[in-house]
Length: 292
Length: 309
Image (cartoon, rainbow over all chains, first blue to last red; front, side, top):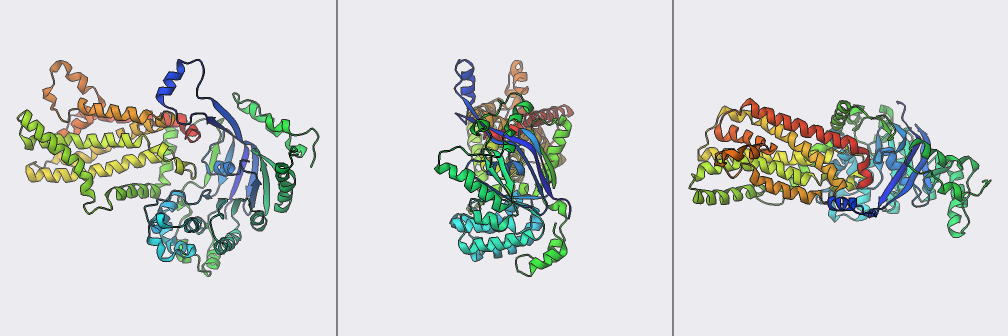
């Protein structure tokens, strides 16, 4: 097996949110004559100085609150969002399952969608042809497979999408909250399939709000908070950290605390990329000398 | 790729297909290149020729996706109707009948000749204008895909142009066959048509690429494009013959790039002779220019597009 790995080196990603996300040529021309800029830009750091090494055999869990940058990190690894600073090296074939059913055409049948979806995941026709029956069998869709998928239920959608993603033994599998739609029986089937795949020493990166999934499937975990990795350790340690320091914070208005190691991380962004303002908001929220 | 033993272990569970089948796949069939470095903006940019090469190379890995998208587009256009493909021919056919009737009545032209003259201009123009009109929204419309999987940015403009191109080839073929029944003489010049179609395709793709990236930044560009395309319809010798122009103004009409492409088809089908080398030269030059412009815009904006969708 060749060296399958992902290394994220000092990656930062900054989103620009435009007040008017769909500008027109007309507005743009008009704006040059106006003193006040109408289309104000709000910037926020989706990812700040992420450093991450994922080696072959790692099953990495990512926990964090909504908006902590978990999905964004996955999308950056896939190549959807190019980082503004830093670089990401991916050695291995990625199957992203970020949102299930990407590229499903609702007018086409389930069978046709297997090929369409497989194509979007970068697979060849021959491969999909050989996997076709296995996918149909695993998804338990039976005769429904030849109906247009607009007649499918949400759960059937999810089953088909999971089957397409997981059946081909991807070297690297990225999953983002994908068990939401399936029933208990299918989720347990997915779990056993994922366990099988792990034995083949591939990489799994799992984003989940279900701590049990992280504990069961992962051997490493990170905690993300406001675009930064604030903790790294075993799944149990990470979840303990997350529950103690970040989740409780929502019910008690006290500031979250971080280990000192992470306090200084945010300041390098400004040096690397000139026009971006220094990152200060995270640092100011950390009480001096706070320790975990 | 998995090793043989591991596949065997799995296939016993009834999940995996035959080991022998899986074993037949080479790892490099597995889509995008396995080793990828996604560099940040601070990384040194590629030189332009190497950039174009890398983009075209990237397309090799999504051949299957490309074919699937084009066939699905065509299938959606033709399916669910008994007449299928015939429906898509109805629009140019009806337009030709109406215009031929009007012009042969008004200007006393022979309807057969005029009809043939019309379609040799109308069909290529419809290919070019439809590609541009639909294609300029191709990136913005593909937002849902682009935010969930990595797709090269030029994929969707290319799919639109190719769909229109296949449609054009089908329409052109059936029209030529129809015209032959009415009295068009088959000539060897028809054999050169694929070359003309290829040049037209590259030209159209270049423009579509530029405009599809532009539309991400200026959403009202689509309306402007539609109006401009509509007015061009009258600027190009599609419904009027070239010799109807007063000599003084002829060069104004001839100076627009679309005219040269239309003249290519007119010469090959209507006149039945090879267009002069000069005419080919113009077309190849325009195709090269638009392609360079398209890739240049793409290189400038590629890493920014996703944030503006």
